[in-house]
Image (cartoon, rainbow, N blue to C red; front, side, top):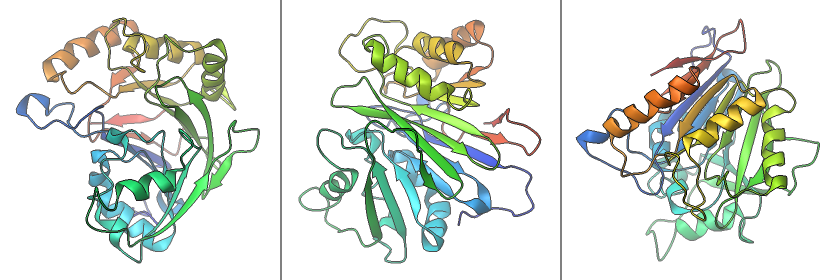
Length: 297
């Protein structure tokens, strides 16, 4: 199980391991928001944890996940198989530990399962060391249907979103507390068909408006049809339409430095005060007395 203090009052903690898209960045001008690519840890303490995507940000979860995988399988949900969302796996040490257990889960993407995609990446000719951990693959059905996928304390739902090559958004609800979040990255909201929009809005609202909506927003109101991405203004629209408690915008371009993102975040908060730009290491903590998470940077 995840390392934690059994006396703590938190009932859910979500940590952003990385907030970049495309490629990781390492430069003094990119320290405030961070340069690692997408990975999110959802930690329910003694009850269990799961991870959304495996960009280079997954490295920061090494200690927790190594312990968790030795006690019970870690659920790794993949939104899609583009390199920036998988690139953290080859160098992730627990993947080579025979005592570590991981459950890979995703719908088919481009006709490929999550297990096949990961084994193709972590192995010859792309990587010299083969996986040593006990890995099991679950192919999630499309559409999700009315019954969620259950893992430990979590109910997981999903829907397809508009992105080149396919992609899926996930909703995670904690059954015994009602805490909830939606993770929607690599979404071209402006190019989405009506049914794609309806599916994502329904995911954000059902069974109740999500406490946290983590939504991509690498563009700044620019028109880039066919790129498979959204602007932060699109994220605001989805959050306001669905009644999300807190909007966290992520998946920033590797070209956008801290100064650029700070100016953009100021405009975001002028429109929606309860919104934030994600930062590497940012934590959202649900306390035992309510469903409104507190942000810790």
